[in-house]
Image (cartoon, rainbow, N blue to C red; front, side, top):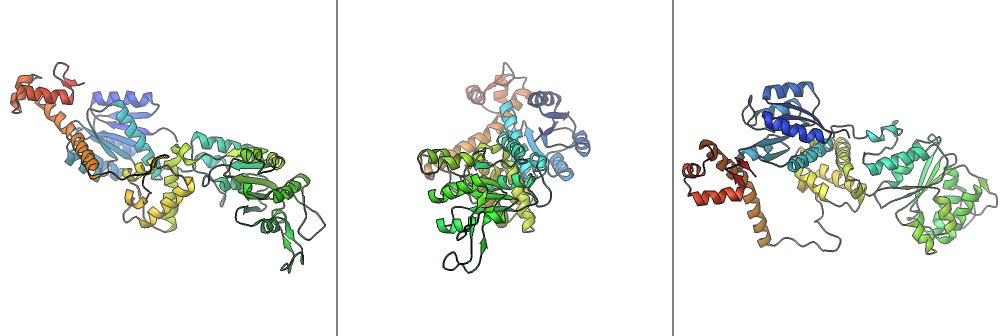
Length: 468
């Protein structure tokens, strides 16, 4: 994804500071000190994020926010203000702000918030969700990937390299990472794309049934064989045969498969006549096939044949940059499928998904999003709609917080919420009294020592006339 285009609406000093911060990060930044000018910029430009000072001249309160959302609802608006209150924060969020950041804030705080807002923009499906995969064949019905992370770019590059050839491919990766999708994409971008793509899961069939499926049989070959059956090697002739979870076939079946690969002929059960085949073979496994081979549980000769071109599918936790794209893709997919009006996903729900580990990878995310869209009672998906399992760690069982722990957390949250209001209270007192501590303390009805203690707590310096 290209960097977000940001519009900063604030006073001259703040505009210049924010412009320097985000231009240094490679973002496109436009600044203005006027609410009216900001609306004209939005009408004429394509912005991802607006950083809006609540007290900017030209509008009152959240009026500019409302006007922005009326013009372009997809824009993510971050509200800032030096005089923060709980009420104004709640009002801003209710009127569509992505988040609310009291002044003064650090560069890291605003950069982190902009990053999250950009992800939210992507997750709501505003951008072309398959931009990276556009280089792959996307004619109607052709499978394609969603994602532009470095990990997936490597996968795309390898697919584009191998697709035009007839080389045998081994796709590895955890369950749910999209191994069959990769196989189908190779086929769809190959010279065999107009011929059959045949897939079989080697896990679901017993040894004798698997061989019967792969090689076929002649009429009368065994009890119940009342007619001749073509095996999948023959069905896939001219096209691609995909053997999923190849590590689960027996050593005996491995020997027969190796012979088919080497000789490019298949002999149906009950027949003595080999049939020539012309297929592209793609295999997949969620196990470490080399280690299994080294233990003697998988034939090394077969492993070498299958592993001509390796492709490793990264787990979702290693391509977290793709999460917003995938969420937006599944949001649109299932909302359209069930004809339900879903405008997007709330920041809180997005945070939950970003913190989740996804042991089931993209397949698990797909199921979570489908469930959330079906169950969501509102136009935006909320945390409760996701129905995620409780958080766990690798070595520690999840234990719910105690009542006392919850009280501590709530107290800290209240303290953090009050700090911006206290800062505004002290700074305004100083401004009214030319930054004289004694007069400012008297102005607000506090003893000088108590007022100085509050200054120390809030890290306000009368000498430097700022928060330090």
